[in-house]
Length: 352
Image (cartoon, rainbow, N blue to C red):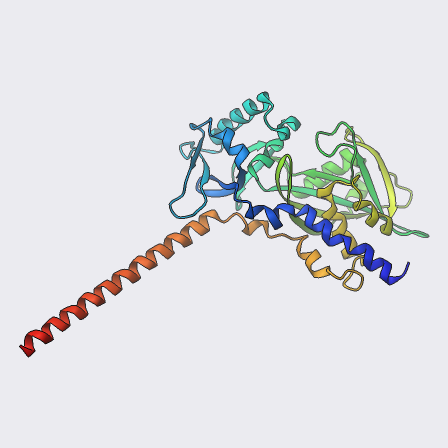
């Protein structure tokens, strides 16, 4: 394959990065979203179709305009006293919405909970299926299982998700992946998912190497996905073949790195898992500034700054300070004007 052919092929990577960052690049300009606040802290974003339903629960959600910003807000009732009460009140609403069949996201209800946090403080938990409706930041782990084949070079294990999975059924995916549920740490989740999804024994799991994280902001018909994925690499023996233990994977396949690149471009690959594969191929020298013209932009779109996007409180305080400064400036000008006027009057009196 010539270098020009490689350039043509890899130019599709930027389009793919735009796809899994479609909300980050285009969503904020739509004007149909409002910040979701808990205890005065922004923890998510809610679209207008969801807000329409939340309006029916005024005892749980305060939906109002904001004096200091052009954007209105949705706030969980600040009268709810603690983590448990906030969780209970929200969960009741979510179960009712689920029973009405109003949102496709809730069809994937699992009784598996994600923490809703402001910075490092957990404010409540909600079923993972509901998080896209509230644009809550989600965290997961992914393991790149790979081997160094004597004839095919670097090869990567992929899994095919079960056709019965609630989300992305039948799609190809990273060898191991899972959400960070309430009560589990990052490394602990990686080890748990490795055993459940690929039956990786403990003597191999101990070789997990932390490889940072990727982040992106995707939107689908189910809602908003501001995701951060903690990435691990795991080199496996040539004779190891993963097999599933929890019924969520229907097949595994070992692909040479170049074929893996092609797989992520197909409609058969889970869109929100593409960043992990691309990141792996960058770190192992298969995607480089020499063969990808948009290399810098591509890398940036693998690390979207989600931690600094939900800044309603910060912007509110900045707006208030700006208004206060304006008022102080106006008061100073008025006082100076009055003083100058008084001085002129004194001059006129003396002259007369």
